[in-house]
Length: 183
Image (tube, rainbow, N blue to C red; front, side, top):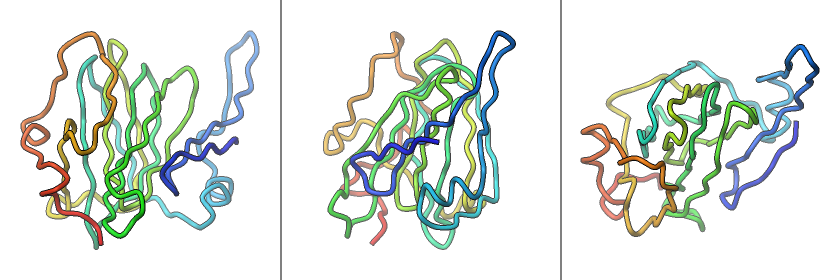
């Protein structure tokens, strides 16, 4: 596996070794020892989630606060998305900065987003199936969000070619200046 750092310390792009021939391909999508070595510590995952969304759907930017803060290992199993992590740790030198990358089913890349970061994605293909492993269970009381189009964040979302579609919850998310953040 190739590990590609992002401008946000701890947020990593993981590129698996894919073996392919005329029959198709094979790759190891997760190996605990290899993943722990890549991130430099043991990480235990407790829940897998999957979503399907159509072009122009934007999900995020979401995160959970302690004691249910979540790290997420995300990948696309069908289609393509623009995936974003935002540093929500006030004490961090990169607080309020973001890193983004395109994830596609064809490339098999994954993004590791540690606890302390907001996460969201925008679907670029006709539809996308999105799979993520989390380090803590979903807790509605701990869930927070920050506005996807906050000018202070200035995320350079690509144009999906259709109007962006949001949930009511994401439409009502506060800007980072008013959001609940990590210390």
